[in-house]
Image (tube, rainbow, N blue to C red):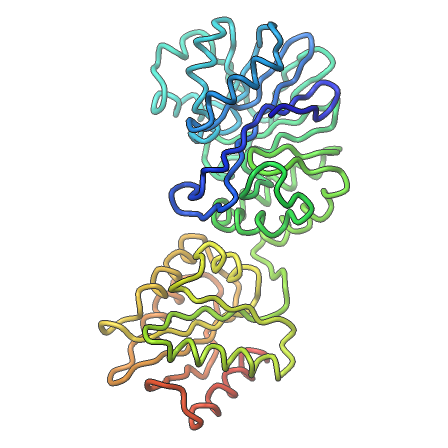
Length: 389
């Protein structure tokens, strides 16, 4: 698929509807897109390539847009293989092509390509460097750890376009749910980029000084001027680990269904007490990426889990481990454990959570014994009052 972004900028990215597990861990039932762009000017710049799964289609798109012309530059914003698998092919096809990248990207390239490929054809750039193509000039902005150390973005001052690498990306194919960008962009951000809130915030400060009319990411749709304010607002919240939505997220891991029943009852109690929004996830069955997304979206979370092998049921352990990896912080968390003879889940959950930054463990911790009974309800009522306080 090729299309015009502006008079001189062409989209040459590729949808892969068969990619249903991105990075071998994130569910993408609608597939995934790998974005790439070309600027046609006195000199021609190709901006990133594609994933190996879609490389043949990407090369067809590139040839179509070039229409016989020879590209001068390949801009490598991000060296991750889903965006850079075509580097060797395009260099072989166009011998005069010059690679433009950060110094860190050059250092990392031999991990993926033969060193001979890079001989005398790499131009390294640093913060504030520019590259004139004619009418268009690209200004390079370093964005290390968004979300790899070699990442940079570039700004085209002619069309006021920011090529944002993995920033502002989303799961899904190119045109899917373009009007509901936030839903899959949020899941993408917290699972892919979310650990690096500080570097994202630094990039946002740099971007604030630019006149940006469109953002062109490496995944997901182009963000138009009408969408920018909301996208930037959300990224400001997400990168600071702020609370996006007032409410409570309940994450439960239940072996035989008793803890799940208690979670549903607690959800009803919270709603009766006026909680504006209650989200719930069955960690044994629901998408883990969505659970991580909701944990960051809300300011309050209740973890409810069965005891298991003197620890906690593994789906809950896995969930909390992932939250730690993604730098979960600045939240209030309540705990409910279930154990028939030696409850241990709360101790393990507390230990995992105490390693995270600025978390408040809300008291009381509730202990259930098997099925939920009427005598347990006062404990759940007290917990609901405490988490909502």
